[in-house]
Amino acid sequence: GKPTVYCYTHCSNIEALVISAYSPVMPKFIFKRELMLMLPPLFILAYGLGHVPLNRNNRAQAFNALDGAVAKLKTGRSIGIFPEAGLY
Image (cartoon, rainbow, N blue to C red):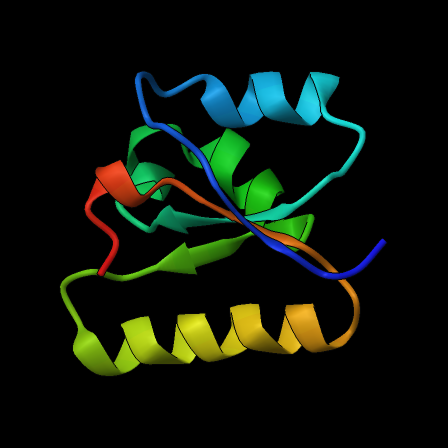
């Protein structure tokens, strides 16, 4: 299909795993980089699989992460984001 930005409702920290397990489309998620500190092995794996960490404490790095997400869209990948998580 066409590259798409999916916006999901954010209720808990397991949604990305559930969506990955049951969705016919496997988006690359934009996730807050702080999560890499909470559960390093899982989020290092996520980064290795092409998901996009976003540093909300550094505006320049945040924009670079969004540029990376746009690059994924241009190659045909879809992006998933949880706006309620506070990603601006």
